[in-house]
Image (cartoon, rainbow, N blue to C red; front, side, top):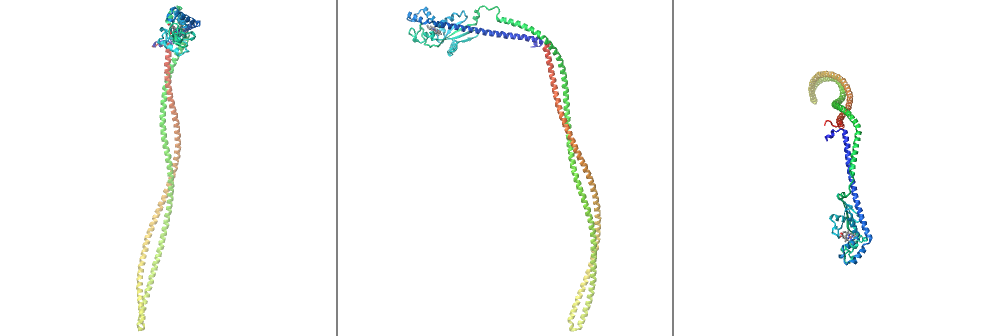
Length: 564
Ligand code: HEC
């Protein structure tokens, strides 16, 4: 439909009006023709029904004349059997049969009223009246439905209106079609010599058909008016269409001109919008990228802060640990100092006990000297004993000499004196031995005393020296401990300071982390917003492009496409 695009809106609107008029006219003509046709059909059907009613009325009229019985009587007296009846007499009889009258009238008026009349039956007397297959179907329809008054068939070429014909006792039908026993000739045959069918009152015997052929009807109807109603309709429509077209042209001229101006202005603004939205889209894109970068660097910062945080908390932990360790060290070194004090005291004690020992040894030496003195005294006494022994020996000798002089009387005395001498010499040798032993004991005691004195003196001297150096070292130790103590308390103080500083640092880092998290959130929001606005800008851009093309096509629609 390229040519359509080239048309301007004005032309298009006008052509739409024209087209609508054409379509409306077509519909109107079609409707007119359709309803006209329906009317035509209805007319034919009405006319056929009227003819049927006329036939009914004729049959009724003949039946009410009661002319059949006298005619039958007349024929019975004139003839012996029906075969002898003249054609004229048969005619006379038939004239009195209502149905025959109806049949006659039906065929009589058919040419004048442009229809074909026919009667048919399933069991006809006249084989011309035998129903064809289609007719038999209609016959059976009436037979099945006794309330059916008539039946219309329209095959597009002709309309046939069927009406049932039932036997009616009151109309004398059974006089010929009824019981054979009532035969006027008493041979089962009716007055005209046809075999009576023994049918009952009300039985469907035949169907009247009134057929109207459209072509014949058209040929036979008298000449129509010069212009048919369809023609008048068409002329009216064309005339109306032209007026509508002129009116439409007058009416749309002004609005179309305004529309055209608006579209042109719209076109220039749409181009501007398109350009601007493109710029917005690109800056939104840049913003989105920048925000994404910002978010990434923030993420990095956050990670470093986290590292710092963990380091700081490590520091805090270490400082706390160091504080507790230095406290422990303080108490250990205090205990060390106490131990050193104890040691110094113990060394003092050792010193005093050493002096005690030395004094004790001096005492012991004096006592040993006393013992030596006593031994020497014992030696002196032993000499006394030796003198006593000598004098005793001398005495015993004197005694033995005296005894010998006494003779027999002194014999016993001589023995005693000898014994005493023996004892005295034994005591003398024992005393000598003791004296010898005393000498050697005195010597060895003196030796021992001298030696022990020497070695103990040396030992005590050594001990004193050692104790002195121990005391000195212990004092040095104490000094060192004192130094350690002051150092440790210094360290402890510093560690405590570090610990509290670390805690403050942790708090600070926590606040920084929180701030960064907030910043991160904001940046994320910004990123989302930026990408949203980038999207929106993109959408806007494409919308603007679409708008542009829409406006372009609007311009083309209103002005017509000049390019194609
Ligand atoms: C006098 C005897 C007689 C009487 C009364 C009579 N008919 Fe008939 N009928 C005939 C004869 C004869 C024919 C055959 C006519 C022909 O040859 O076309 C006939 C034919 C018909 C036919 C056409 C079908 C066919 O058999 O060929 C119908 C329908 C019919 N009669 C119905 C009636 C009805 C309804 C009545 C009563 C209103 C009636 N008749 C009364 C003698 C009679």
